[in-house]
Amino acid sequence: MKNALSIAAKLEVESKGNAKLVFEDQELAMPVVEGSEGERGIDISQLRAKTKLITLDEGFVNTGSTRSAITFLDGEKGILRYRGYPIEQLAANCDFIETAFLLIYGELPTRHEAASFRAGIRDHTMIHEDMKSFYNGFPHHAHPMSILSSVVGALAMFYQDSLDPNDPKQVEISLYRLLAKLPTIAAYSYKKSVGQPFMYPDNNLTYCENFLHMMFATPTCEYEVDPDFAEALRLLLIVHADHEQNCSTSTVRMVGSSNTNLFAAISAGISALWGPLHGGANEACVNMLDQIVQDGGNVKKYIERAKDKDDDYRLMGFGHRVYKNFDPRATIIKASCDKLLEKLNLDDPLFEVAQELADVALRDDYFIEKKLYPNVDFYSGVIYRALGIPVQMFTVLFAIGRLPGWISHWIEMHNNEATRINRPRQIYTGSTERQFVPIEKRG
Ligand code: CMC
Image (cartoon, rainbow, N blue to C red):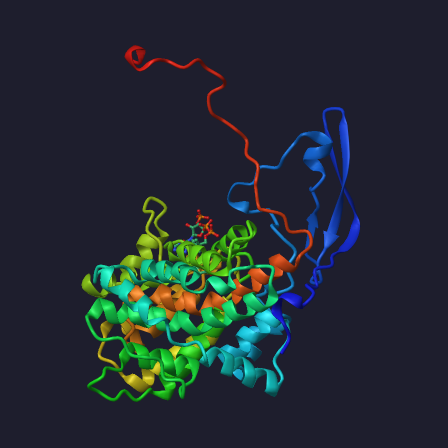
């Protein structure tokens, strides 16, 4: 088996001449670099040293934080590739564990590598019995994302033998532990919320089947995993597995750049994902659909609200910062969503509203002109609902899917010789120096 930390990162960029910065009486030539898909960037690393200027880019809209060889996406063309492989091909042919291997090690596994990777993960699916007692201290209404980040952070207490980010063997065992235990930790957070006993993992099942088993089986009742449920989950985890330098991945890289251990960095990534502007959007989407149902199912009313300039209402699950074409992830899971809904034939008005909303919006000039298509969160929320997964668990599922992406970026960051502790600059806008005022003299 290859060792993740020993794999050289392919991070070369081609030099494409210089960009020139002219400021007052200074002139600086800065190299323009080009990546393997033709994306160009100006290398400003000498800017401050040579001119005392820094760049200001709030929200990092124009800032490339790193070179990376993991995921390529082109939002105009609706392209998403992991390690060069189109997401459509991976979704059609791989399981989640193979996809995780590809992201982490850079190549699709051979039959032998896949078997040994799977076996390694199976070895670690249980959590330490003492960890279960943490759950007794959590309130039953705790959000599962807060449980997830706490318990993942606590893995560093239990596995102090594998915290050195520079030791390939320790990194290897940590990544196995994380991939194996995250579904267990997640399913236990659900069991805690409904007051049911925890179900041990069943290592005879696949990764997705095992998660459904731990969620829905009880000691008193056999639970037979529906293969269509496991298949829908497989697709969802694969399409969420990486999305280059998004907020949570950038968090994992930044936290990891201080040389902290992998568990601590992943726990930070989980916290970043929790926010409604990031992984929390699928939850927001189903809540919106629920609200439309409660309000009589008047889809047109909500479409009009979303179009009204004087109303800041937005349709959740529509639009994307990067994709100005159909979100390729949405295309893949829409088919699975349609199949599942047809099979289950559930009597839930939310699904009708979802269908109608997508149909109306896709024909409406406002949404067409602004290129607002249903995104991955629109369909993922609907699928999770159909699978019977409670709404608070939606972002947890996103975290399980994104884990291999976070791990691969953390490893790439450590393999990159150019990595330094991430420490941005600022433009200070506070008071200039002033004299201390004793408390009795303060107004
Ligand atoms: N409903 C109605 N109008 C919208 C929507 C929407 N969902 N999204 C964008 N617009 C309009 C917006 O009002 C603006 O109009 P105008 O040009 O007249 O001011 C125009 O489209 C461009 O919007 P923007 O806010 O400048 O676009 P953005 O790239 O900053 O925002 C977004 C992207 C995803 C935050 C936004 O589309 C949105 O809020 N969508 C709903 C939330 C959602 O579904 N988020 C999940 C994204 S997918 C998960 C992931 O990949 O992380």
